[in-house]
Length: 454
Image 1 (tube, rainbow, N blue to C red):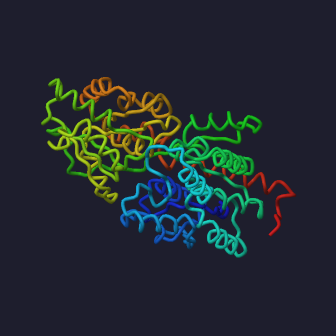
Image 2 (cartoon, rainbow, N blue to C red; image 1 turned 30 degrees about the horizontal axis):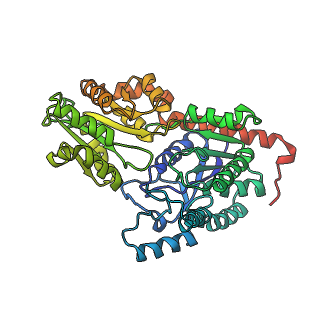
């Protein structure tokens, strides 16, 4: 067997970052060497990551290049706003929380200014340090391919510049959509949305392969870029890794039944109708309030908690519904295994499947999801792991929740064995390695591509 191919993997989120996006990348780094691919990670220094989890470790023997991130006018604006208005409803990354709209000139000017300061996203201060580190690295070492992953989309712009300069095969991994991402502020001016579409198109046309993590999103991209060959777009889902239950775990259902949502609840998702459905069940005496406990474990937006309190304050006061802050991975894993029913709130993200679904799947625990018809509902039907309901009707949600409480737990080892070929990160990494090897072989066979300009 020859020497492994070397890839430069550009990823903003990487351990010890607690960002969920780092999970996909770290699993690829774990398994790619088995298939002849040796990754080097280009990421940002940990001081620039918002949340850290030091129990989340990178695989050993993986070279990691960490760079600075320059402060941008958006950062200065955010600091100025926080000093002037400590309780201002704007996040550090410049994304406005939901608020009443206004047609006043100052507000329109602010929207245009923030849109201008966050092109292509709030992390563009990473672009220049990352480009400098990448150019220095490529002068001294040979890489056979580049893989970039987003969000943030700045990672793709770094890869785009490197592809144009060095003509190295490039795979662009879209963990989330860009142009049709419903999590982006709807208040973005029309010119900003058009610019995003142009920037995405430039990346898509230059990349050798565009990877989407659901078939739904792949179809969206194929439809948007009908002039490009369909084989330019491929699906590589998220997945699960080996996950062993604690040896002392009791698989009998608990009293009260433990229902768990793992992770934050942010804009674009809603829990108020779920909480209203629970409240209706209790008031109609269809649900014993002492028989169930619902735990939201993660950084839930305050507006979401307020919406829950408005429709089901009594359930929060009684402890039936509880919100706790995010914990490290080991504590989250313990709560995951102790749950009886696992919850997903997918909202309007029809083309996406949250990574937590695959981790849920590997436990064998039943799943109850609030979602529109889309990628998540399809994979739930495919795997038969639970029940989903629309997010608008509390009555429907309540009735289906009662059914979900009766679903049995399936042995984790059987579930993992059944779906390992399709969803285990070893299998997914094998597919990614195959694509990389194909592109490298194609370039080596093309005389015009053998000695790209430096």
